[in-house]
Amino acid sequence: MIELESLVRRNIWKLTPYSCARDEFKGRAASVFLDANENPYGSPLNRYPDPLQEQLKAKLALVKGVAPSRIFLGNGSDEAIDLVFRIFCEPRQDNVVAIAPTYGMYGVCADINDVEYRPVALRQDFTLDADALLAATDDHTKVIWLCSPNNPTGNALERHAIEHILTAFSGIVVVDEAYADFSNLRPFRLDLDRFPNLIVLNTFSKLWASAAIRLGMAFASEVIIGLFNKVKYPYNVNLLTQQQALKVLDDLQHVELWRATLLNERAHLLPSVAELPICKAVYPTDANFFLARMTDADRIYNYLVDRGIIVRNRSRVQLCGNCLRITIGTPDENNALLGALRQYR
Ligand SMILES: *Cc1c(COP(=O)(O)O)cnc(C)c1O
Image (cartoon, rainbow, N blue to C red; front, side):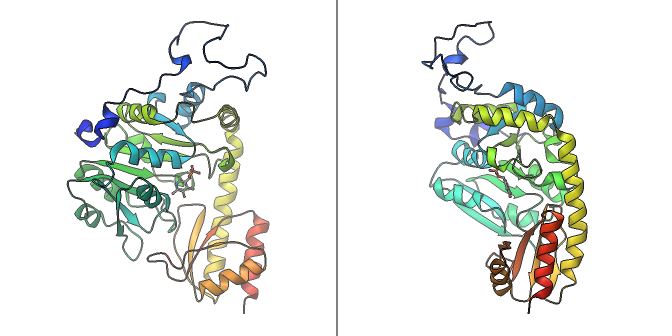
């Protein structure tokens, strides 16, 4: 068992959160709202949105298989990432450990919050060295950051290694599963009962094709979700976003179609890139992108830019020398990429 109180910053544990006007009457029927200094005209955007997004969470609970009380919704996953630092990490005192390379926001949020960030390299084949991460922790390590499937490497981390960290580490373990929709592996959000120190991140930005509405999810124990709710801005998810998210959840058949199309494209694009003479290796992926090691990533990147095709140059990232990160696009887009790469001299 973890002792949550000892992991949470004292000021946050003791915090009395802001109380919204709508919180105070909650549960009883009402039709005249003169409590929040809103303009009575201009419905529906004149009213403050539901601060806890209950309708949306009820629907998400069914799709994700997680109780509404164990869901936090934020302005992108990025909000949840920042909140983890603000809830658990005392600036200039605590530290966090993370895999490297990985998603850049963990390190940026650590810097913003003045919290020491300890990157620990994955193995050369991008697998997770659980013991190396654990060895980098000390009494002031509050959080371990894992990303699976990992960005930018594309691979899912081994479940047994993640479980080893969840069991052996007495702090918080975040597993960012932004890309789990593209893999067939069992998602960690279904194992919250077994791991009270687990926080899982999901997003509307990738398979759910809604990066513009800024909506991210965190799944964790009720106590941890309670802390998120206490610290977040009261109306952190606006009404337009909540309404659009409900529409997305009403059309999941469409999402399934996208998934099938993208996985099919991935299966064709990877070997086609791999057989190019300018490609040294493509790495196995569980995501909607893949990492390709090229003969000269900088020059190929600029060549593609000149043809209006933008990929991500990751060649200056640890373990990723000469690597380009390529997102799976539409069939036309993928063909444009392949055509250009085949003409590269
Ligand atoms: C894209 C991405 C996200 C999504 O962030 P949002 O703020 O929800 O758009 C989260 N984690 C990783 C690793 C990502 O690559």
